[in-house]
Image 1 (cartoon, rainbow, N blue to C red):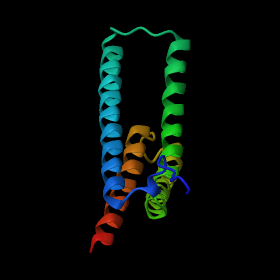
Image 2: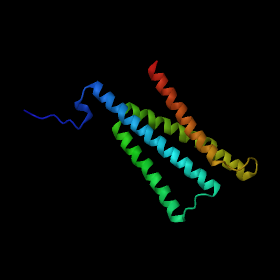
Image 3: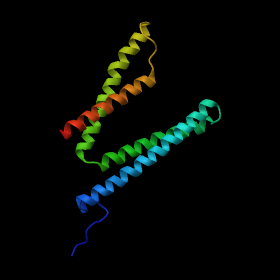
Image 4: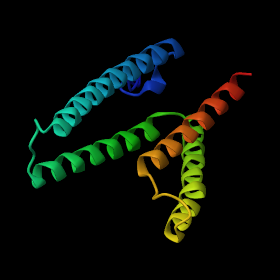
Length: 144
């Protein structure tokens, strides 16, 4: 008699897998919410001058944030199914193309003096917004 590997989600019924997936996504959501609140609180203190960080501490926190995002992305893409990976990668590709399609001409026009300097927050917002809109459109299209 062989024993079944219960550590893998594939060995469970669809209901159990869906419940576990909801729990994992809920935990990720609340952890992200906590991190966002902590980062926003820290940024508010930094802007008011109430938070003084040394250069090493600031760079260490930035590196930790980047590694956390990278690690989560690798874990997420290994965990989800192929369709979800494809949708995410296409949405990110569209977002990057929008940023380049707007950012490069804007930078060239700014260099020539015909436009204001490139606003990186606006460019990042355009990139994230277009990726989110494309992702939402694909998900809605798949539901129809």
